[in-house]
Amino acid sequence: KNQVEQSPQSLIILEGKNCTLQCNYTVSPFSNLRWYKQDTGRGPVSLTIMTFSENTKSNGRYTATLDADTKQSSLHITASQLSDSASYICVVSRGSDYKLSFGAGTTVTVRA
Amino acid sequence: DSGVTQTPKHLITATGQRVTLRCSPRSGDLSVYWYQQSLDQGLQFLIQYYNGEERAKGNILERFSAQQFPDLHSELNLSSLELGDSALYFCASSTWDSSYEQYFGPGTRLTVT
Image (tube, rainbow over all chains, first blue to last red; front, side, top):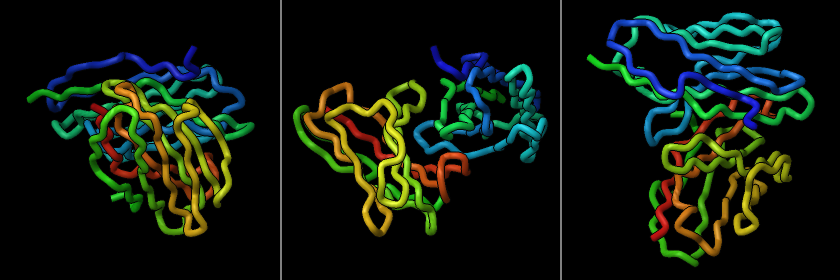
């Protein structure tokens, strides 16, 4: 069973609308959690990285939250743009050996 | 541009053949990671090297091998290729270990016919 589960698997939103992606993990002990954006056929690009003590971090219109107690994170996209169409990947680093566990990703499609 | 370079961009080869993918990390980064991403699949971690030494292994097949050279560039060797090996292969680098930010290269698209 994957230690990082993302939902939904995919979603379609209209340009200008907001959306929220979810990431639940069981990785323990926890080191950090990252959100990546991957355009089709391109390498992932880091959006945010959060450690245990951080519960929110923003990068422009992207805001990530972390609840280390419930082992949940979310990525909120505000005022979506066509360029936000991509796959968003949640990655959790284990504290004991820094092994990375990858979620399967959420595919976001923004329509005009 | 992440600063990580990968060559070649595209590679088409036949089953049973052997290929080598090359990665140059960002200047100053000591760790290199290799990932495989098949069509519509998530990223699968293959292997990590740190300053020339193997640091961690993921779902890497025995037909695959990698190494990191003294100048810190890395090569991923894929042999006895099968149709199922067709995928995007990404290299990433980080300053130290995987607790640090990883920067991904543009990938090499391998097609096995």
